[in-house]
Image 1 (cartoon, helix red, strand yellow):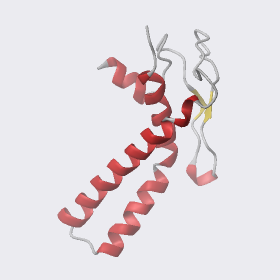
Image 2 (cartoon, one colour; image 1 turned 180 degrees about the horizontal axis):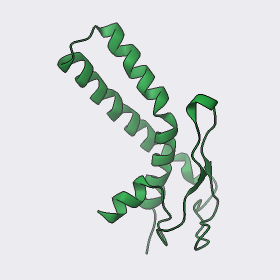
Image 3 (tube, helix red, strand yellow; image 1 turned 30 degrees about the vertical axis):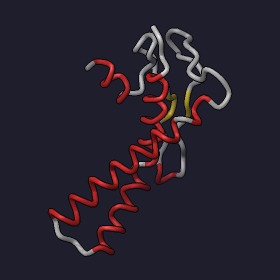
Length: 116
């Protein structure tokens, strides 16, 4: 369970102390999160090769789809809103969660390929 917490906190998979991201980003200011190239604590290199984080795009897509499906079920079936309102809510949630998904997908991708 501690690995899941470390993934959610975007901690280094090697030492679990250093942060993967130096800046969190802000969707309202149009700032994307800034990622450290190496862990500030143990000097672990996060990007194994050029294009390593290309696969994190698929993880981000899966997270976005899951969030959209949960929103659809919640607001259409349980709250019983109109399809247009549900669409607007889903689009808003996708936009607002984009920086979180970016950070989380890269963290998950790093942990998938980390070997002790």
